[in-house]
Image (cartoon, rainbow, N blue to C red; front, side, top):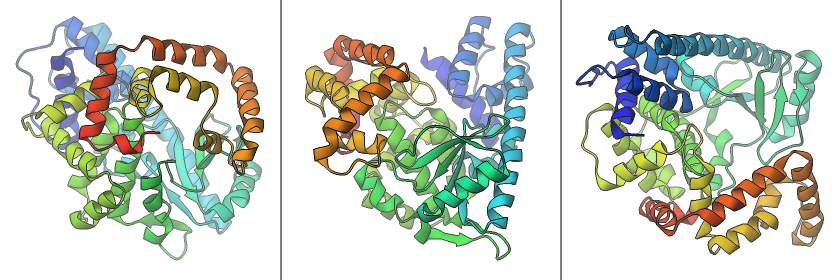
Length: 390
């Protein structure tokens, strides 16, 4: 994928979301438009890119590609209406049942976009207090017809509505990265009620931004975070009134200050025409190789060093470390129980069709070249994220 295609992507986003002038020196060829469609779809932003291109008259001679972009817009609107319907039902139910809750991520961020349907989401994220988790699940299943899917995870329970909307019901917002979690665990300390007649809480603007940065960090060290999370951060930094000093202090406490600073600089390159430095250029390349949630190749490359090379990584996939088992099985109590849960994990992987996926990961691990691993390792070290990789 060429830099030109990525530049077209960010220029279109800046045009629609921030009113920037579309910086395109010539009409893209059909081949470039097709590549742009595929890239923007991979980052779940094709619906926005299509608006910009259509407005500039750049899709008139490419009707098939124009139809693809238009379809993404219809789909985005449909997804939004579905999510909004479920969000309204959930909020009403939690209010009636006196269950305090906080809307997270897309459910909250979309209000800052030019049109709320422009901020798409794969799922609906809502936080309740851990002591209220069981009654929240009971309210959702008995009153709204939700179905629980799977076991309790590290920070949430998966449920699905009758219409197919995926709800991640969080009982914390931790990311299983200790330096982040020591701040994220204080989420309710930064929350206040919207109004007395409702059980909805909102966090301070500083914590809202911090949570987005922390979540982007989690995905970045996991193999890449995509364009959208960084766009969210840039958008809110320009829309919200907040204390930059307080935000920086939260980031420094979590030791992600360097990453936050680099994200801000990268967004200035994307949306304000700032010149790239070596670090932002490497970040862009890392993001470019993945989609909305990165790639397994980048994920594995980032972890080889932390786990002692190819052999160490392979062993960690067969015999999961304690913290990985603990994340998957919260009932695990102490290392003495690890053999029991190792066997349970193997059974679950086989039952869920994960053997093929695990074999693919081991194949990627074995085939990674030294240069790729070195590049990812260097980037993580420059951003001071290597300390957060397990």
